[in-house]
Every structure is written in structure tokens, then in C-alpha cells.
Image 1 (cartoon, rainbow, N blue to C red):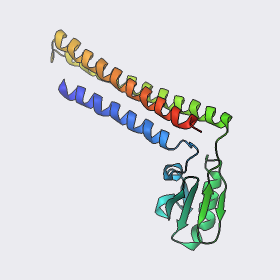
Image 2 (image 1 turned 180 degrees about the vertical axis):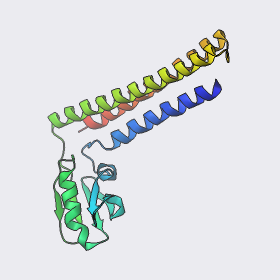
Image 3 (image 1 turned 90 degrees about the horizontal axis):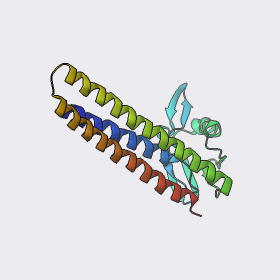
Image 4 (image 1 turned 45 degrees about the vertical axis):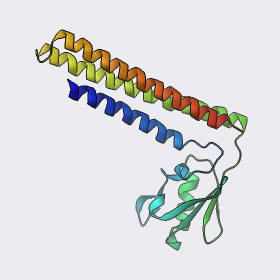
Length: 184
């Protein structure tokens, strides 16, 4: 029974971690290396993460600088950035590729908030799915006479408390991200 509850909190925490990772990819008007983390570059026929073919740095709050280790990778990196859903244009000066982050428009900010809410809702659904899975496992244990009915209810209460706690964490993360996005 304790094993199921521990597993429940671990899986719920993974949902929160995933939500925060999704949030880090949302463009907030500030440059961040997380914006290009999920970009894959076609490198000698293999899709390779950008950070494995170049160094990525932030020289100032509105610029991402990408310095490829191999001169042959410049055009592939540019293509990968253009194909990505960033909506930004890379600038190649021969030594590095720069991506300038323009200030966000009000409309774009609202779209980003909608996207953040969607990510949060997905995380909450994942948390509730974990609750359902653990409660089903606990009911099977009770049916198999491994735990008593009282133990089942206590465990379900603990699982519900964990669910409520993690849903609150997701909502708090959303509120913080929404504030960050709407900040001018």
C-alpha cells in the first residue's frame, strides 16, 4: 500500500516536472537556451539535438547565439530553426548564428497564455490519471484481501490529498508563468 502511494507521488511529480519543461519552451520575450532545446538538426544524416552540434549561449536578454563546432553544420542548423515552431529567423554571420527575440505583441502574449493553460490542463489530466490508476490498484488489493476496507479508504484519502496538492502546484506554476508572459 505504501509502495503505491509513493509511486503515486513520484508519478505526479513527474507530471509537474514535465509541465515546467513545457513552460520553459514558451517564448516570453526573453532569450533562453530552453527555446532551442527541442530543435533537432540533420547532421550527417542523423537528427541530432542542437546542443550536440553547437554551443548555445545568451549574449543579451534578446539574443540567442549558436556557434556550430563544424562549419558544415551552419546551413542545417538554419534549416532546423526555420522548420521549428519558434517563428524566428536565424541570422548567419559566418562565425555564429544569431536569433533575435522580438518583443511580444499583446495578441501573441494572449496566445502564449492559452498555450500555457493547455499545458497545465494536460498536466492536471495526467495527475488525475495517476490517481485513478493508484486507486484501481488499491481496490484490487482490497478485493484480493491484502488490505482491509479501512486501509483502502485511508490510502484513497492520502492519494486524494496528493492529487489536490499537485493540482495546486500546477495552478501555481501557471499563475507564475502567466504573470511572466504578460509582463512588459
